[in-house]
Structures are given as C-alpha cells and as structure tokens.
Image (tube, rainbow, N blue to C red; front, side, top):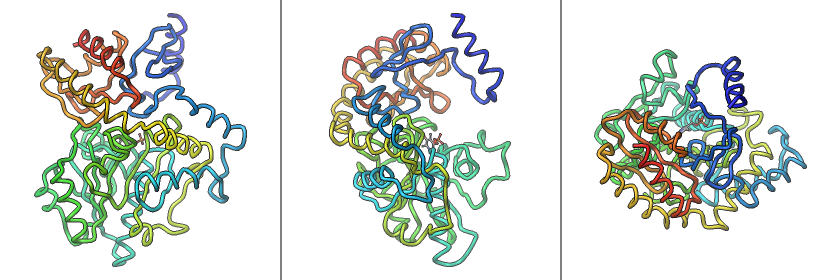
Length: 396
Ligand SMILES: *Cc1c(COP(=O)(O)O)cnc(C)c1O
C-alpha cells in the first residue's frame, strides 16, 4: 500500500489539481484487463475514455510502435515522412472523404474544423462575421474554440468571453436548428452520438434533416466522431450507418489506440476551398510515431474485422444490459449504439456506482449527471460481458 499512496501523494503535490482522481494507481494492461500497483485487477469497460479500442498489447501494435521508435519519431511538418501519408491514405479510404490534417488531440481537431469552416465561408463572401450552430449538451473539448461550441454553461462560465458567433440548438430537434440558421451560418457542428452529454445517438430524421439544410444553404456539416468513431458504434464512423457524410469529420481517442493523436478530415469540396499554406499548422501533428500508430490501428481494424466483431457482440451486450435493467430498480433505462452504451441511474448518484464498480474490479465511467457509460475495448468477448454484468450487479 505504501507505494500506491506515495505515488498519489507525490502527484498531488506537483500536478495542477484539475481532476478528482480515484485512489488507484494503474500500472499495466493486458487485453481488456488493467492492473494497479497493488496487483489488483480491473475489467476495463472504460478503455481510457474510449481510447483503447484494441485493448492492451494487441498483437502487432507494440511492435509497430517500437519499429518506428528505432527509426525516427519526429520530423516537423517542414519535411515529409512515410507513416503520415500512409496513415492519411488509410483514413481517406475508411471514410470515403478526401484530405486529412493530423492533430495531437481531439480539441485541436475541433479547432482545425472550425478554422476550415470559417475559411470556406470567407472564401465565398469575404465576410468576417460568420456563425456556427452547435448543440446543447454537446462536448467538443476544452480549448477556447472547442469550448465555445460545447453546449455546457458550467464548463464555459469562468472563461468568458469565448469565441463569438456561436448559436446553440437542441440535439434531435430539427426545428430548433432551423430557428438558428441565418445568412451568416457557415457550419453546423455536432457529435453523431453525444458522449459526455449522456450517450444520445442522433435520430435518423434529425441528422438527415440537418444535412438537407446544409446542402440547401451551402453550410458545412461538421460531425465530431472523436468518441463515437473508429468502429465503436458498429460502423467505422457512426455517420456511415446513417448514410449522411459530413463535410468535415473530427477524430481522436481511438485513432491511435493510446498514442495521442487526432485528425480533421475534409471532403473534396471543403478541402478545395479552405485551408492553404500559412493558414494552419502544428509542430507535432502528423509526426511519424503517432502516424505509425494510426496506420497500424487501421490495418488491424481491416485485417481482423474489428467493426464486424462490434456488430456481432452488440446484441449480446444490449440483451445482458436490458436484463440487468429489469433486475435492478436503480436502472431507469438504456441508451446507445454498438459498444457505446449508457445506463440511466436513478435513486443514487451515478458517481457512487462508478466508485463501487471500481472497488469490485470493474472500470466504468459516468456521463452527464445520471448516466453510467460503458465504452469497452472493441475486442471484448461474451465472457467479458458476463463478467462485467456480475461485477456491475454487485455495484448497484
Ligand atoms: C473527448 C472528446 C473531445 C476532446 O478530445 P480531447 O482529446 O480530450 O481534446 C471532443 N469531442 C468529443 C466528442 C469527445 O468525446
């Protein structure tokens, strides 16, 4: 125990206190299991917040990274490197979109998407007062631009003034979006499945309706796939199941499966008339180490049919969760898509349930004020689902 408390204490003395962490020091991972410094094991249905899509030490992944470390891990964007082009080509192929800009995180992908949309509109009319419509209860990141389109006043309040020109509408309410459209609207941004806000998938009619508005008025549709993308919902990108392709898509989280990397991806129309040399940049973005990870991850997804596995295992997970909900009074309902599931918890704080689960060796996360979120590695088996249900049931 000494070691664990020493590590926690040391961190608390020098790390800026922006998180109330659980009293656990994680040390190693294996498959879908994590182990702390005391040797206690946890079944991981959080995946580092939807990051470890392949679990820990997936065959071939570590070697790909080690191989790149031995060659070169950084070049800057003044020069070419091979993994960057390879990773981008695979992302283009997986999305059917056109061009990729690699970032270091999700929030930076959002910043880039916002800049690309504003530049596209500026190219058309030269005006500098364009507006973006974003959704209430959305989450797009913590940097100021991304925070400005995040529909959560609690996150925004102390940091005002934020970026101007943002209007908010209600997710899954087409009329409320229409009411915010003006001649100045350059983009509509939303998560295809809202994550932090409480696991709300977009309704089909809603997403199609927004797409129709965008096409009619040449407004860009930005879909944030940072959490719901990369196979999690049973399609490589959640929008593919809706048949609604965005003009700009943002990715991060599972894109590198643990290596910090994000991207914004443009369709041809947007790429042809937005950011050009001098408009946007990053020192690290697209570096060969991060891109070797992306490249390998996309290879594994294709070769090992990860998305197909998600589609196969989803009905089992949903059935087991629904049965649990019937047994447990405190579960008011289930929402979600694929391996992005939320249980609505009533009569007890969701934080308590998450803490209890941790004590019982199960990692789950909360979302919104009352939702218990399950975003496991995409490689879970039926046995993992059964084990999760046993541990969760004990925790509620
Ligand atoms: C996590 C998340 C972000 C922010 O990504 P960071 O890498 O934490 O900056 C943005 N959008 C969505 C939907 C997310 O889930």
